[in-house]
Image 1 (tube, rainbow, N blue to C red):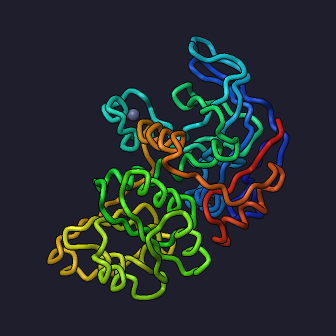
Image 2 (cartoon, helix red, strand yellow):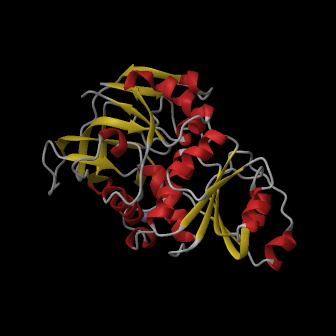
Length: 338
Ligand SMILES: [Zn+2]
């Protein structure tokens, strides 16, 4: 079968399409013939060695959906031909964190494509807990691309204790996680404002239901405050926007952070944190129940999981370049005709 492999960590050019042996499912596992997979910024980071794969060659890709085509020993409840969505979160399954489904705290927690061989492959073997029935009527492109972004966004909103009727500001809208955060916020009965450096993306967000939008490079904290402030700010941009994000929050507001695309270090005005009683909340990835809740909101049509670009499996480098350019409004998917 074909699989995209990283043979070095020099960026997108390090991806090579290779012929590799088909994996066989072990006990408790199923093999999935992938119909669509989804791209995440993780695929760009890993290609740069951030973090470096355990070994090379390495196949990235966290998200996918496909058809079960082989079943391992001791597996019940699955049949050949079942359509499934792959939940990319892997963990040991038996520690105290796994037993209460806080798998993100498991010492063996990992994501397909980062810590494990990923979905940019014709087939993949996963434990049955990672193969979730695909709702009827959901397209392969949506099913194969919403996962990691949606579970990450939902976990941020849940960690920030989102309540119905609150106001959420999503900073740097456009990419998968921020687009998911926007859509899930509305699905959960809250109102959303966005920021972007692109007027086109702000317009897109407002078409999706955002109440308003501000320029990320401007004083959006002041503008949000003039409208009453945000109960929650979702910021994955980091140093370039966190100062304004703190200003945008109401007193007692929560700022959830799951990424730092503008760099790793930030200088904070500490009195602004305590006088205004703000909370900074770190969040990363999500657990199986959060994946299921995100899927359910999409299945019911309450949340959207827009796919902005679709490429053929063989065009992964082109798809990664779109992701890198930041021009997408939603997820970027790869399809395989099977
Ligand atoms: Zn565990």
